[in-house]
Every structure is written in C-alpha cells, then in structure tokens.
Amino acid sequence: MKVLGLIVEYNPFHNGHAYHLEEAVKLSGADYVVCVMSGNFIQRGEPAIVNKWARTQMALEAGVDLVIELPLVYAMGSAEYFAFGAVKLLDSLGVTDYLCFGSEHGSIEALESIADILINEPPAYQEILKAQMNTGISYPSAREKALTEYCKTMDLPAEIENIIGSSNNILGIEYLKALKKLSSRITPLTIQRVSNDYHTREITGSISSATAIRNHIKNNDSSDFAFKQLKETLPTSIANILEKEFEAGRGPVFQDHFEAQIFVTLRKSPVSEIASLCYVAEGLENRLRKASEQSGTLEALIESVTTKRYPRTRVQRILFNALLGITTDEFNTFNSFGGPQYIRVLGFNHRASSLMSQINKKASLPVIMKVADFKHSCNPLLKRMLEIESLATNIYVLAYKNPEFRKAGQEFTQNIIRMKPSSSG
Image (cartoon, rainbow, N blue to C red; front, side):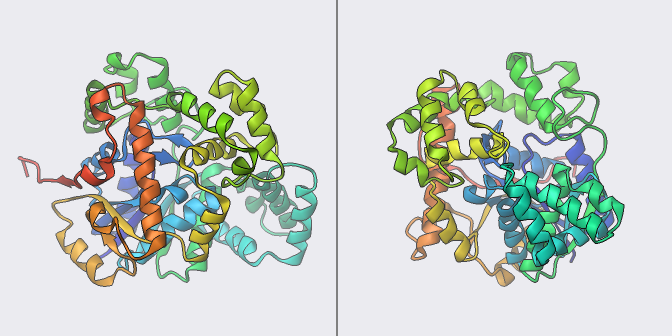
C-alpha cells in the first residue's frame, strides 16, 4: 500500500489543484491520497472563503481518500511553521510514503540544495544574512538576498539563484527542511506549476489561481455564481459545493467581515497585551495600536502597518492572532513540545477503511474522530490547541449571512464528512 501526502488549503479547490492531484498520483503510483488541510483560517492570515467541512467535501469529491486538519496555530503560521506542522502530521500518520508539492521550478534537486544550506547555515551565509537584516527589510526578503549572494560566492549552480524568490519554491524548501529535521522516511516529489501565477488577481483561463477566483467572487454578486468565466476554472462538483454554501448563507467569507471585531480587539487591548501576540516584535505593537485608532477601515489599518520589514501577510496573521489571543509564549511552547499534538480527521471516502486501520495502528499522535472525546484531555497542549480551534470556528461563523448557522460550538456538533460510493459505482 503506497500513500501519498498533500499539503493543501483548497481555497477553493480549482482546476490547477485537480491537475496537481492527478499528476501527483501518477508520479508516486500511490494507492491512497491523504491531505493535510488548513481549517477556517489560512496561511496568509485570512479566513477561508468557505468553511473547512465544505472544503473537505471538495477534496473528497476530487478523489482524495482522507482529509486531516492542520491546527490553526500552524495553518496561520509563517512558511516555516506552516510547513513543519503539516509535514509533522503526515509523518505522524506512520503510513505516508510520499509528499508531493507544486513548485515553480519543478526539480527536487535544486530545492534540496537550498534546504541543506538553510538547515546547516554555514558561517558565511549567517554573516550575509545578518548584514541583510540590518538593512531593515523583512526576514524572508533578507533570506532571499542572502541566499542569492551566498550562492554566488560559493559558485553554486545559477539555477539556485533564480528559484528562491518564488512563493511555492520557498514553501517547497520549507517542506524539505521539515522532512530533514524530522528524519522522516517520506520521499519528497515536486510537480511544476502550470499556467497562472499564484498571486495573479485576474482569471485568465481554465487554470487560474485561487487568488483570482476569490477576487472574482468578491467583485461579483455571489447570486450570479453561474457566471461562465468562473465555472470554467472549477470542476463541476466543486462549483456545486460552492454554490450550495453561498445559497445557504455560509459564504463567501472574506477578511472584511471581521473588521469591527479586529478594531474592537485592538482598541480595547493594553499595548502590553498586543506586544505579547504571536509575530509582534520590535515595537510593532505601538504601530498596531496607533493604526487601530487612526484608521477607519481594515484595509487602511493593514496598509498603515505594512512595511518592507513587516509584510502584509505578517500583519494579517497578527490581526487574527489578536482575535484568538494567541501569544508568542504559547506558540513557542507548542513548538518546544514538537508541534501538532493530534491528528484530527475532517473526512474520508468509502475506500479509506483499510487506510484508517493502518493509521490507527501506526500513528504516533492521538487520532481524533470526535472532538468532544478530547475536550477534557489530560494533555494540556492538545486541549489548548482544540480550544483555539473551537474559538476560531466560533468567530468564523459570525461572518455567515444566514444567522441560523452562526451558533457557537460547531466544532463539537459537526460530523466528519463521509463520502459514500456514487450510485454509478
């Protein structure tokens, strides 16, 4: 039995994801596919366009066998922590043979070379990195420039210099770093991304970025969801799921829906409390407080805090960490005790019984099928991670248009998504 692992957000699942899934299965020869998926908030520090159960259904409809959740503190983490948390879960299953990720470069060897540099951090690289940080730019930008300069001084292949500025390459490198740190037996594979750039905001064809799709939905009335241009970017079954969620009033969900909550949180919190939040450093708490008092919209707040040193995604993560009360000390504690504390199953299909049987035998972390069973866990870190997840969902559902679905406690009442065999099969 060969098992393929994918790390995803599916926000939403689109034709590019379908291509990657199909090619990953071919490349690995896998019998089963397991996805580690972000929950209701994603890595860029934003809410997902529809909830994690709808996106789980998307994954299962597309052919994934099992979906497990990446705990929020890692799902909304920087690339390094996002990657580590997800890889840790795939490794902890005890059955994963391959991890396949998309990259702009498409070759695993060059990505491996960069991962080795970042793990070993040669003294010459450390000096260059320190000098770049002293210029006042963000850590990711400083690291990119330091890697470029280091590769030149070491006469390393030119292609290494050309790949470290692309987002999916960087995330792939973080996956490779995590595999090495965990001494994982999982074999990494990569597939070159096709067509649209990750950050492209306009729909340009049948394979368009999730960013472009979300932007299109936001700028067009969701009641006109049958708009042909958008339908062409999504598999029919996925379009149907989105349409169902929108019609029910459970989406689309966007960052702006939390504007008032974020302003209230920042304006009422002592500056010392803002300073304790995850990803806040070097006096950034003062900029956040001032921006919350002098801005009238969430976009204006974010723009006024964002700098070269503190990019937009970091600011967005901080804002939602503020809503959830996630502090640097708490996050550091999670990391010092190995990261994710559980394997939380969101959904599986009818083929997954033998896969689940193997996971239950081999997993090195508790497998959660019913959250309520772990509500009073004797592991305080596991319990706290679930508390954060529950609060995140309680806040997320407040953005629904339909008040019927805004009730708290859905982490404990929502059933696992079980995909039955199709009537034709």
